[in-house]
Image (cartoon, rainbow, N blue to C red; front, side, top):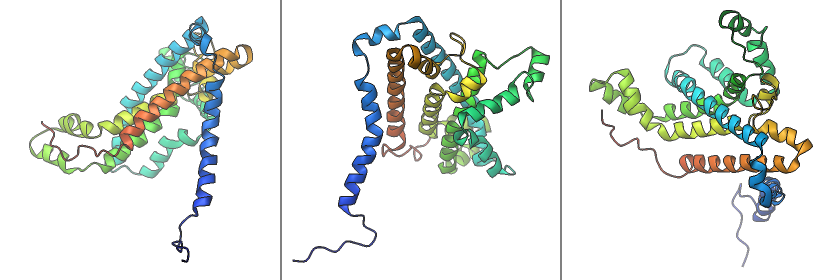
Length: 277
């Protein structure tokens, strides 16, 4: 009996398996190395050190603040990009998404030139409101928002573009105002994408390093977040660096699992269900 002929374009099985295993090993081995080197017996003691606790607290405060700011500013921006007849929409979208591909250190330099004491806006902020952002905790929030908000914008914009506008039109026909339609129809229907975008934004803000150290510095208790603490601890206390890295790894895996279950879980958004006004 002759062997079955392979269909055109079909990849050989013996080529796929080794390549797939090599790629899995490439991504899994660093994680295994981190987990294997974790000082489990001293883990809670290391995480309880004052400097580590302060870095954890500052990271949570700044990343959650950056996420909240991203939601407040990013959702209207996503709506404009998805729905409004905005001139030069492609250029605006490219500028909004630029921090996703821009080297973080370059982003920090750009923030300094914009919001530094002699920056385009920073000099007026200091002169009019006595507000200084570089090397402060609000500066950390600004840097994290700059690099993380594009994740929210692109996720929400995609959800708004795929949303069936007939439900919003029906609500408007029944007498609902624009804010009511947004609050009772649009936002509930894109809630899974909004939550996924917020989680991705939070995870990105929590792991931000380059723009933060360039724009806000690395001052313990003021601007030293977990990634910066890991960088410093690698030279003085490698065990603490591994413990902090494990916390960041656990948070990242959890966020990706939640986002994956919402985006790729195979469940359709409840677009066909009427939303009460």
